[in-house]
Structure formats: C-alpha cells, structure tokens
Length: 364
Ligand SMILES: [Zn+2]
Image (tube, rainbow, N blue to C red; front, side, top):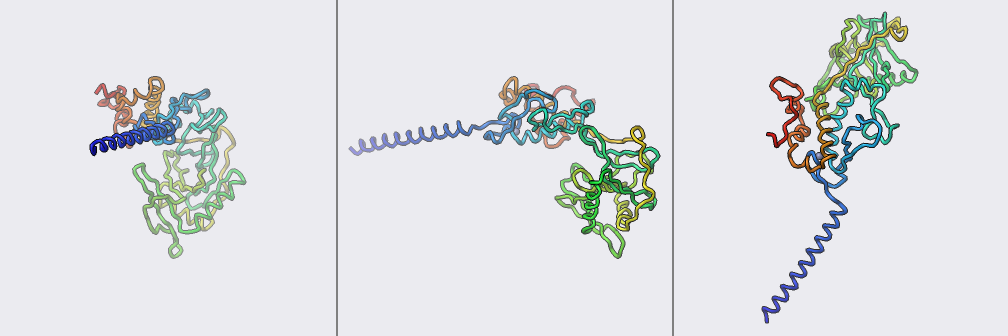
C-alpha cells in the first residue's frame, strides 16, 4: 500500500516535471524565435541581431551605383569596425583613387547616390609656393579635389617678423580667436607620436622672467589642442620657415623643423612683430608650385581586398564554408591586431615569402 502511494506520487512527480520541462522548452523556443542568435563568420562570436551590421559584400565605395549585396547577420559590428579601417585605406590611399579624385566615392552609410561622398585622396601634407615668392604656404585639399590656403601665420625668417595669411573675411576672427586661446594659459604643445605610442607627449612653454622657454614635459592620455608637425619632404631651402596654421578640425598646428624654432616664433607673436611688405601674391594659375605627399598602407589595402574575397565566398556559398575552418588562415590574418605579422610578410613580397594566396587550413 505504501509502495503504491509512492509509485503514484512518483508518477505525479514525473508528470509534473515533464510538464514543467515542456513548458520551459516552449518558453525557450519562443524566446529563441523572437531573439535568435547569429554567429560572425570572422571572429565566430555569437549574439543577437543587435550585435551585427549589414556587411557589404563589395565595398560600396568601389561599386558605385545600384543595389548592394549584403551579408545579413553574418559579420559582427566589432569586425565591421575593424574592416572599415582597411576599406578606407583601399579607398583613400591606392593609386586607383587618383583616377576617381573628381567623383568621390560614396561612403558606407550613404543612403542614395546623392549621399555624402568621400574625399578620395588622403593627403598628409600639402604646400604651395607662388612664383617670385620665397615662402611656402600650408594648404588643404577638399572635395572635389580643390586646394585652399589654410589660415596661417608664417615666420618670414631672419627675424623679419611674421606674415599672417587669411583668404576670406570669415577666417580672420577664427584665426585670431585660436591664437588668443593659445595664450590664455601656458602654451601646451602636443609632440608628434609614432603608431606605437598610446599616450601623448606634451611640452609646456611659459615666460620666466620675461623670457619664453620650455618649462616641463609630461605624458598624457589626451592631446592638448595645439600640435607640432614636422616638415615632410620639403625641397625648398628657404621656404620651410616655422608657421602656425589653423586646421579643419579647429586645432592649431605649428609646423617647424624642430621644437627650438617655436620659441622665437612665440616671441615675435607676443611682441606683435609682423613683416613688411607682405609677400608677393601669385599671378594666377600656372604660377604656383604644389607639393603634396600620399602615404600608402599596403597591409590595410591587402586586408580590404582579402576581406572582400571572403565576403564573396560567404555570399555565393553560404557562411558554412567560412565557418568550416578551411579559411581559418585567411580569417586569422584579417583578425590580426598587429600589422607586422603574416600580412606584413605577404605584403613585403620578399624572396623568402610565398607569393601564393594565404594557404587554407586544408592545404597546411
Ligand atoms: Zn566578428
């Protein structure tokens, strides 16, 4: 009798447990159908759709008009953010961009053909010299491929004073306000840093007994809003004098041969010592010399092309092909944090390196 009660109790308990389990499975299934998870074909991390971006199979900036193929819920936001750096490099720093300089490719976020276009030439320095004028001037480059003089103050050299240059009435108050801000406190200058540096080296200048001098150096997480840029590839011997220019980001940049040249510049600026007469202006087109520099990061360009290839495979053959591991080496190269390892070896194309496509896992 006791056993019988126990058996009934056990049956009831099992039925109750089964019901609860079925219920739990139903809830889980319902939850999963409302909140499915997806897996990134590159880093293999999983997450809900909010974790993913629509990835263009071919970069929109290369395709031009028309509908884009997209990989939906296959590439996570983290990987997409990494890849956009490669794509920008391909877009802005390959010789092919010169040919497209006058159209400007569409950016990734552009909704239509009239969307925002990207300046395809990434110029890291641009100088202009007018004929019959020994000075060189800082210039910028805007879409669609037009240069403009930056608001700037140039040291005429040999203690002759400074030469202010603005090309429109609206630039004058901007430059004046930036210079006033420069002297609001000790002048803090951010030195150039290498790609290895995570922080910034800041030099502070101030007056001591009426004389401007460097008073301290420190390393900080954030830069000060005044930067030092060195002259790059300037063949003009007498034109590369120190100058202060207002850049598009609103920051002031000193361009100088070295840090010591900043002090006489500051002294002339404080003493309001300006040069006379003003520099001779250009007679117009054909009377100016331009010097600009492009730098290429072949590794990023290579990775952008490699990623496009993987996207095409995923588009035509499904993400299982990528996830199978046969393209593990390719994925590993794309996910490298440092650009000095395998991609670097391939891009160097040294005699010792294979010129072949990165080996698939099945080939190794
Ligand atoms: Zn990912």
